[in-house]
Length: 108
Image 1 (cartoon, rainbow, N blue to C red):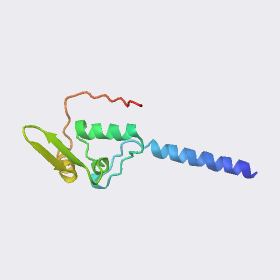
Image 2 (image 1 turned 180 degrees about the vertical axis):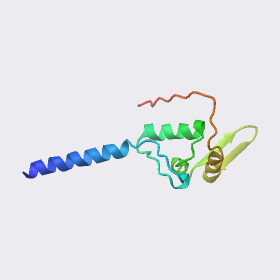
Image 3 (image 1 turned 135 degrees about the vertical axis):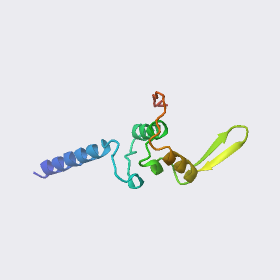
Image 4 (image 1 turned 120 degrees about the vertical axis):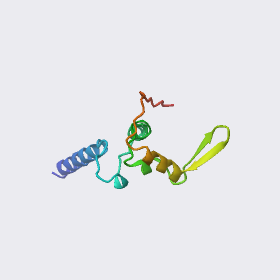
């Protein structure tokens, strides 16, 4: 009987964690408080591409670590802080690029 109870408990935990990970892009009324599921590389990459190309701004803060900085090489080297990048991406909310994207995760 104990084995049966443990089996059902394990099955319930697996089902709950599967549904939690399967949560897609949330539609949240307040994007500042949005929590986006970035638990796998696929979800994180898909969200990053959506932010960059589709103008989605929900959960953009989750994409970058606190020590993130962006260095752009042009005629001069420009370094953008995390807050500058996030601010720029939030200003692009709703702006959709006329492009197609595809991603491939290469495993070594």
